[in-house]
Length: 414
Image (cartoon, rainbow, N blue to C red; front, top):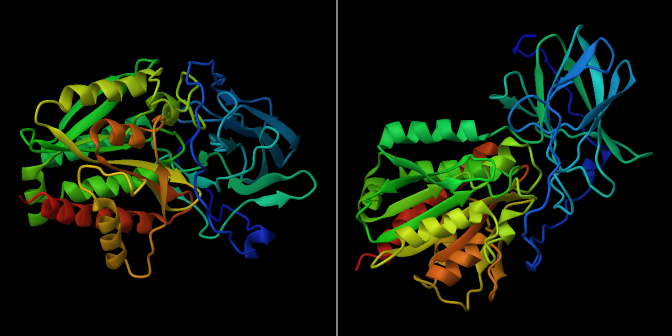
């Protein structure tokens, strides 16, 4: 089985409903308390699903995979079962698997989810798990009679990778950190271990002696890859070889925790960590090792005269949006967030930020609300849409980083 893809014209078929007007995204409802005590998770069987005849084979033997079962319907049609790690759970049905065939042929793959779970992610396709393609306006065919979605794709002896989003596993993120480390002499460490023993990476940018600190974080939730791309672009702007970035790095130290949930990411989970919990609901009780690691790391670093001026937590959702602290609550630099977002708007023609206050008072279930209440940091959740184009994500991340550096230097010049 080779890892070169033969899928010229892998067909992501458009739904007839694409012509419908897209409804305005309203964003997250107010967050309420849920139990964050550890719960069991469903472990996937890993290997090659070879009970589908002697022609077409499916596999999930890689980090980030999610494939719970395969049923052959006919010679060219297969049903894949995609189930979550446990329930109840947010509707983020992540999938990732490989498929190959003894002969060149076009097949249909029907996606079956648990009852009441809606299809969310249009497929990304790859020959090696690294470089991905997707039809610009493509989607699945929706079967009206049973509400399933079907993907048509050409397969061959070469491996075709199919995933909800591009794969960005702990190994991929470690490689990205290594590139930054070699380029900028950044410091790399770990804030702690997950329940499965994986390191939670952290690296620093800038001046360790600086009293003013900044925190950048991401991947509380495994499928949120578009948010990670925004994090990459933002961070790379801070490490750039420009006069602005050099001046910024002399005055501040930035902690970057790009992968808060490595167990969930590598396990191909929809939402939770290996303790079966949404980490971004555990920043009040701290029942999970990942949230405790963040808390304890900051307690160690933000002491004496040190101040956590700003924090930004990257996520993905249905459409681009920023979640903020109630503007009536005052942090370390009052007015910083709206001023910054307005400058980003001015630098991206035609772009209007969608902003929604999401934190008003304790308890602090989310990371950004915990950081605001504990350190009075100017805190923001930076959400990227599931289908936001990568070139715009990169542009938005870079512009956001540049305008952030300008404004925070100006805001702290005394």
